[in-house]
Image 1 (tube, rainbow, N blue to C red):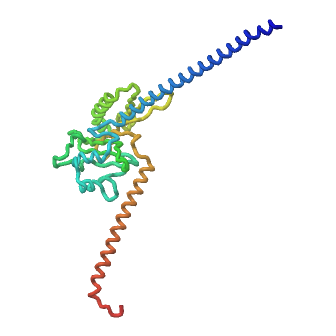
Image 2 (cartoon, helix red, strand yellow; image 1 turned 180 degrees about the vertical axis):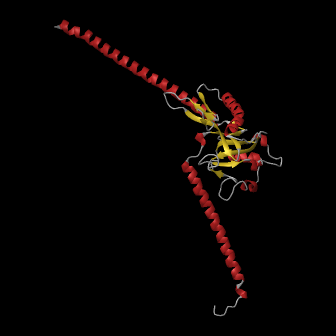
Image 3 (tube, helix red, strand yellow; image 1 turned 135 degrees about the horizontal axis):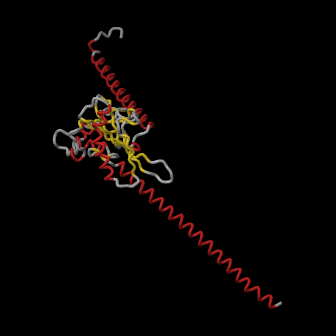
Length: 298
């Protein structure tokens, strides 16, 4: 009986050892699993960070020295006068609150654009070359911008050479497109950058809207991200227009409508103030005439 009792201790020790080993093994597996998850998460974060940096770099591309995502007010400040006076600054805006010359839906629907030529300094004070490289082949320069943040979403330029037909327009612009693409690719050496080239007058024998996309390849079977595009406009008074645009910087329809509402509100307030001044002046003039009129029966 005593011997049987003594045999329980080694058996119990073995059982406890097995349990201990099992717990250690389970903890080891859990630790390795968590470590693998952390590594995968870290790798995913690195991939995401790389992707975001690449997209941000593409969205900061320049055309004629004008930076996408830049501030249109800083751009105009440089073109007009490096240190404008308060009066000069106020003159850049019309009563609606928009930059003077701003047009809606001129190039793209639901976007606001402004011609830069009217702001280029002629007095020699401004360092134009810091803000705009004026190419002798082009005559007009525009930007599309967000009226609230003043962020530039597109840079547009008109070629001096006029075209006779759609094919000639696209053909005239294509050499400039090639140079722009080469520079952007050089500035963004990323293996995930995809060029989707549809900048041709015809595709599949049919008239084509010329456009070239810069896309970023996504992993896990997700659709590629459209980051930039170059496109042509052929049809505005026989003008050949080239545009570099970052779609993700464009304003949405809700913002577009809010701008319209604010513009209408500003113009209404201005109109009401003008009417009030006219009324006050009218009453003032009438009061001046009181001494000259017959007051009998009044």
